[in-house]
Amino acid sequence: MRRAGGGWALVALFAGYAGASQMDAPATPGPPDSALVDSDVVVDGTLSPAGIDPALRASIDAALQARDYTRAETLLLEAVQAQPQSAEALRLLGGVFFLRGRPLNAAVAYKKAEALAPLDERSRFTLTMSYVALGRRDWARPELETLLETSPRNPLYIYWIARLDYDDGQFEAAVERLLRVVALDPGFMRAWDNLGLNYDALGRFDDAVRSYEEALRLNRLSETPSPWPALNLGILLVKLDRLAEAEARFRESVAADPGFPPAHYQLGLLLDNTGRPEEAIPELEEAARLDAEYAEPHFALARLYRRAGDKDRARQALERFQEIKKREEQQPRPPSS
Image 1 (cartoon, rainbow, N blue to C red):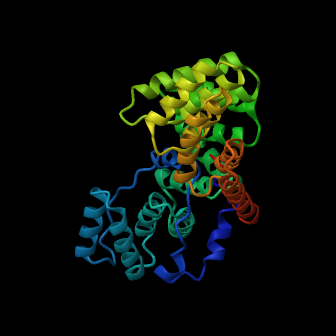
Image 2 (image 1 turned 135 degrees about the horizontal axis):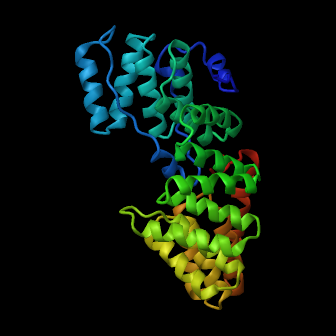
Image 3 (image 1 turned 30 degrees about the vertical axis):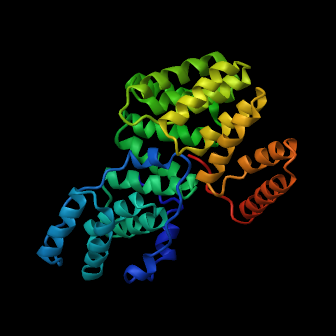
């Protein structure tokens, strides 16, 4: 049975929607691994003829097939303005909004579509991912449970419930679900990685290392490897005082994605802690450069600059750290997924 959940508040909140202007919320940055969320979402489909110009339908179909989501968004907004009762256009628009980094807009579009006709399974999952990106896990869990009722052996749904379990501190429950996921799909790299996180949280470090290593093995086979498994394993190896191995993993994380700030930050910390401050500073500076709102590299740099006798740069780095932290207190970032 469908659960109403908090998502209905979105319909009431945006009940006055009359076109593009009311839905044009600013793009919202996703959680740290938002690209992993995006990879679970596919937007395709065609529009029925009712009320929508054939040439416009053809243009929308072409834009979706080309994955030109900027153009698809513009065209779909035009289609919704022409036919506000088209649930199909709203569903497609929701998916495009999500992939363009607009989870609030996506959720609004999906809830308006659902008011007109039941959502298909794929659309409901993307609505759920919109809630995750918004940090509304209390809305996401009932949707995932509904999806799991429909497809009880779908490892993706079980995986995402386990992700919510981890965020809620329910590590044993998450482990149980993730073991089921990897039994259903042994090649599910992210499930192994998250299994490692939960074992780590439970203090089961040997199990965590084995899970991370399996995630890393699978990750190395990917054409587009993620920087997360190597980073997570490296952080655990630091905790276990296996520093040479940790350094290798941090460097592997950087190699997987040179634009990944946490890998540069963790590598910089390790280099400093192993007596190589001259190598640490460039890594920490790169982490700060890549993410202007990443506070921790500035704090580490302030310490290193002060130790090197550069009082001006130390002061500037500390002030920058304090500025970012103040903004975080005023407007917290969405929790990681």
